[in-house]
Amino acid sequence: MQVRSPLSYVVLFGVTLSLMIGCSNPASQMKTGTEQGASSTPVTGSVRLGFSAWPGWFPWQVAQEEGIFQKNNVPVDLKWFDGYLESISTLTAGQIDANSQTLGDTVSSIAGGADQVVVLVNDNSTGNDKIIVRDGIKSITDLKGKKVAAEEGTVDHFLLLLGMKKAGLSPKDIQFVPLETGKAAAAFVSGKVDAVAVFAPFTTQALKLKGSKELFSSKDFPGSISDHLVFTRKFVAENPEKVQAMVESWFATLDYIKSNPSKSNEIMAKRAGVSLDEYKAYADGTKIFTVEENIKAFQPGSTMTSLPFAAKEMSKFLNDVGLAKTTPDTSKIFDDRFVKAYAQKAKKP
Image (cartoon, rainbow, N blue to C red; front, side, top):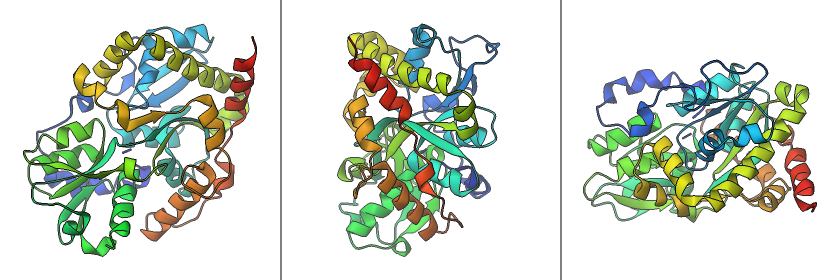
C-alpha cells in the first residue's frame, strides 16, 4: 500500500534527515539488486521487473523461486528495491521495464512526464494501509493540531486526507510531517510524531509503540488504493508477447499459491522480513484480484472501484495539494488487452 512514493519528492529527504533513527523494518535492510534466486547475470532480452515491500507484490518472489516465469517462457530479471521510491525513479529513468506500483504513483509519474501503462491489477488495499495513532487519540477530530507523518503525495497521504475530509477536517488542521514511509514509522515509534500513515509491513513496526492503535484504514475507503503491474509504453509497444507472458505468469502464480499456501507463505514472509504469523495477519488487508475483477476494474465508472475514475480523482488530489503542476491524460494509462487475452485463454478446455 500501499508507500509506495513518487520521484519528484526526493527533495523531501533532505528535510527528513534529522529524523532518521535506528528503528527499521527488516524488509528495508535487504539490498536492491537482482532478486534472490535469480542469476547474477540477467539473460539477454529478459524483462526487468521491480518490486518492493507490499503484500500484494510478494507473489512475484514465489514466481521467481518456483520457476513460474520459466514455465511461461519469459526470462525475468526480478529486482527487489528496499526503497519503494527508488523503484519508481528507476522505472522513470528506463533502467527497468516494469514496476510494481500504485495507481496514484503512476498518475504522479505521468504528470511529471513519464510514459507508463497499467496492464494488470495486482490488488486493492483493504486494510493494510493504516492511520496509526498514539495512546489518547480516540477519533479523527482528535488529530487537530497534532503532528502526523506520511510520505507526501502518496496513497497513504491520500488516505489520511480522505479520512480527515470525512470528519470535517482540512489539511491545515494538522501539523503535517513529510517523511519517507519507513522513516515515518520509525519517527512514530520514537515519539517524534503523534500519528502516522503507513502500509504493511511498516504497520507492524508502527504498532510496536505501546498504546498505539489503528484509527482508520483503507478498509474504510474501498477502491481508494490499488496496486498494479506497470510497464513503460515503449516496452509494451515493442514486446507485447512478453507483457502477455508476464500477465499469464501472475495468474499462474496465484493458482500456485492457492494450491501450495504453506510453502508460498514461507517464501513471502521471508521476502517481507517478518515472521510467518505476522505475514498471515496481512491476508485480510489485501484483496488480490482475480481475472474477472481485473476486467471489471478497467471499465469506466463513477466510484473508486473503477480505475479510470480513480485515476482522475488521484490526479485532482495531486493538483489540489500542489504536488503536480499538470493534469495528465489519464485515458491513456490503461491497457486491458493482456488481461482480456488471458481470460479468453483460460476459458478454453
